[in-house]
Length: 132
Length: 108
Image (cartoon, rainbow over the protein chains, first blue to last red):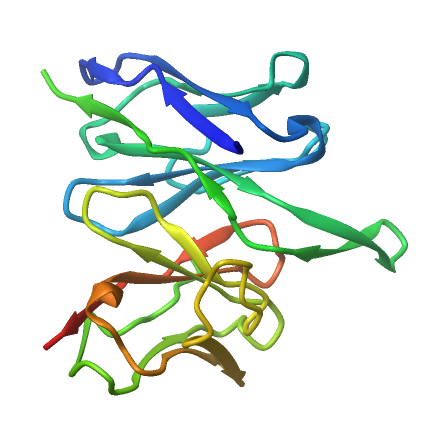
């Protein structure tokens, strides 16, 4: 069964740090790009970060840039999110989501073209609460 | 920063057709995706690449695109379709994913 399981959430004081993990099973983790997506209580979904299958490409939302770091260990089938300088507005359920894509070629030299299939597998989420 | 705009709510009676729109300047260039989220559950992908349906998603779910607006259409709405629906795409550079604010679908 294809599965993603997040862990590492909890209560942390403002300015503190937390490391989230996402354990993948049932598929070849090293072949897939991954995302972190969060949802504040009663609010909508917010994309947080993206990492390609080989970790060569990483993107962050402006709201977390410079504070959060995404990484992965393909040998351990795991995705991570290191969160530093946490703020009250980071309080949310954090989901990891698989992001399958196919490389179609080069749009222009140095500009790859991909076919994306959407975030097709999600974990159940882990809750992060930032409060004093 | 780039934004996708959805109506906060849509209401339909069972058996009717629900249409949820999503607007964004980069949508002519970037594909759109739709997710269904029921209370206390993780989101589920229902449409990818504007109009493609993943395996296991009922045929009553369809997607379309026209200019800066994409639309999720649910034909013959059932009570089980009551949920929040989110569109998702990327900015014009493709480096930033973005979600719309979400639309609460109520089945009357």
